[in-house]
Image (cartoon, rainbow, N blue to C red):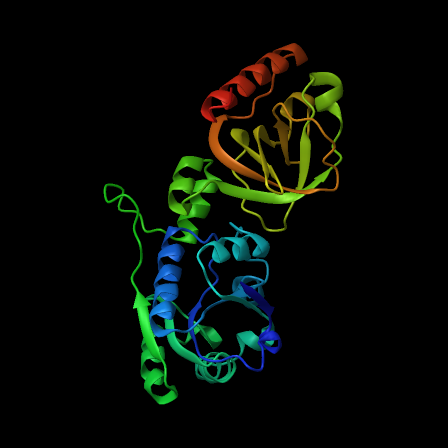
Length: 313
């Protein structure tokens, strides 16, 4: 998959394509269905498929400080999109200047002039352009003039019994509540948090016998609710079971919220490495224990329960 940041990186020889546009935060099951539709259309027409997304999230530019919690880093988003056989991943830097581009200008300058779109596949609720004035209806109106067709895809729902619309907002609410199974059902995979391993207070190894990898997480990441979780520690292509703690370490009167993982049956120095945590299930709330021995006993139980949930021998 080709990756471009900004329209200037689009090859000058680029021909016609099928295009899908959106933030695609999370690349959840609804996004996946839309992307598959675009890829299938591209194959049927004999054109490559281009997915266009934005960085940073448009909300941060339009309403500074309102950046929603991100379900995927841009890097992870590209990885997930590549797995769906998209041919090119275009990131448009969302700047104040871009936010002021009218919907009609966006169609002419981006879709037609730079990408030579033959078909545009978007969600029926897709909005674009200055003050979100553009819609699927506008695309359908402009398409015949500029030589592209427009295909609006309806929203995707989860379990009919739950009557849940699959959206990034819904997934964020699941993550914020610590409901990792519901989040995974909507995403089609466990929710992931990425970051670099940094030095913590060193208490895990020296006092508790459970050394942890402390993460400096990617800015604006969607962090699950405080608690203890069973999950996977991902370093490159290696995946190891982990008991994950999110909170302020109340037993030791901690004040800063941390994300740390005890990597089960895995030694090594992870400092400075970029890693990921895949959250599978919430085990319990964070608690303040009366003694270190009581805390260690509970950690023992957490690790054993993690192994059971992850089916680790």
